[in-house]
Image (cartoon, rainbow, N blue to C red; front, side, top):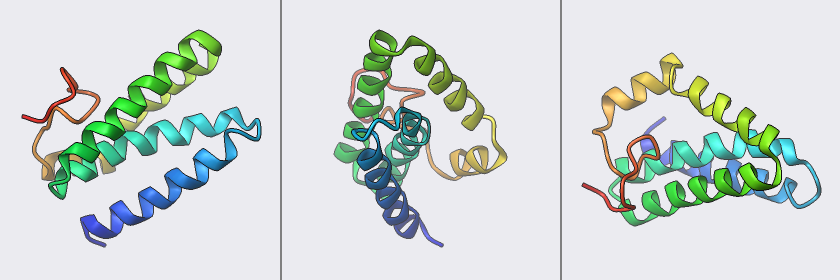
Length: 113
């Protein structure tokens, strides 16, 4: 599977998670934030930096909103992101893709380097 296929499948997953949140399934935030994180990286990897920035900004906004409304869930979200950042599959992806400011782990000012 190439990066374009991964991007397509990740966008599909994002839309599914976003549909479940309004119905009260708040735990859908856990996979949604990891999906947004992955999207920020994949968009940049295929040269679609504005969309990478938008995904990173969406992730940051969702994390801030959760910190206010559901602090416990916000903590779980951060734990999930920290866990994702140490997984072998994520580390392998990061090695293949140059670091970009669109990645929320390196987000400075919502612009790509």
